[in-house]
Image (cartoon, rainbow, N blue to C red; front, side):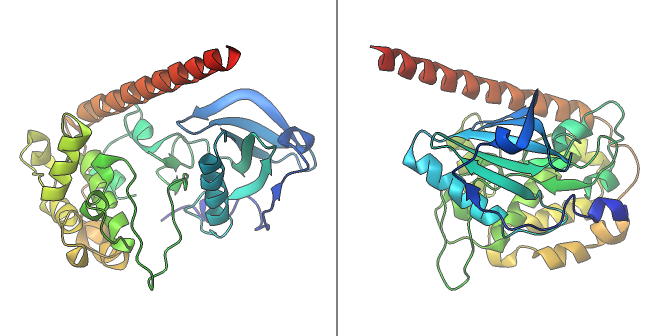
Amino acid sequence: MPNVAELEPSFPFRPIEIHKDKIPSDLYDISPEELGRGKYGTVFLCRERATGLELAAKFVPCPKREDRRNMEREIDIMRTLQHPRLIQIYDAFDDGKTISIILELILGGELFERVIGDDFELTERACTPENILCLTKTGNRIKIIDFGLARHYNPDKKLQVLFGTPEFAAPEVVNFDQIGFYTDMWSVGVICYVLLSGLSPFMGDNDVETMTNVTLGNYDFNDATFDAVSDEAKDFITKLLTRSCTDRLTAKDALKHPWLRESAQNTELPGTKTKLKRYVIKKRWIKAVYTIIALQRMGAKIDLDLL
């Protein structure tokens, strides 16, 4: 059972409006300590002067109108979300060039980074708990932290998207078909597969090959790593990685599955952590390449602006 304190919000619910007459440094002390850097922004440790509350400040440059709309949509979604498993927004600012959001501070590190640590015992039971952070550096409790690609869902309207990480995207996303709650359940299946084996079920040599594998549902449990994984765990994944979205486990059904309720083994998964480390290193390398490309493009733009 989770620690009760871990379920309590870091701060009371507060209505969020985007300040356009202030900047973050008017109200917060921004530390030079960088907590994280991603494709869309940089996160720093900060402290609210009025309360002393430690938070995270995310700065996202918005040079284009589309960038601004995306950030405004993310803020709109986040201010409606109140759940102990979701990161909470505390404040927001727009100075015309950069949108800054002040967020609940979570210091446990990324999920995949956490499980490959030397002090983490990787078992099936530990796997039953990339844009997911651990609450602490020692526990297994997690929070979803990134809503940049999230959309409001109205069951009376057809919703389609054509973005996301190919290896985690469901077939209906790749095929630009209607999506629903079942779409996220596919991604849960991919995450469980990766955590249990250190392998990515649909990863190809490039995005096109990966998306083809997703569309065809091409995956298996043939790697020797799965010899130590229980049949119940494989059954759980199989019922999530089902091409027919109506046949996939719902969130409620998934929580009732025997693997989550009673049968997850508490023995070490031999070989999985080594492969998981390779997987994480590969993801870091890809992220670094994208960062270099973005910086090169930015440098080229700056050079052109100076002409």
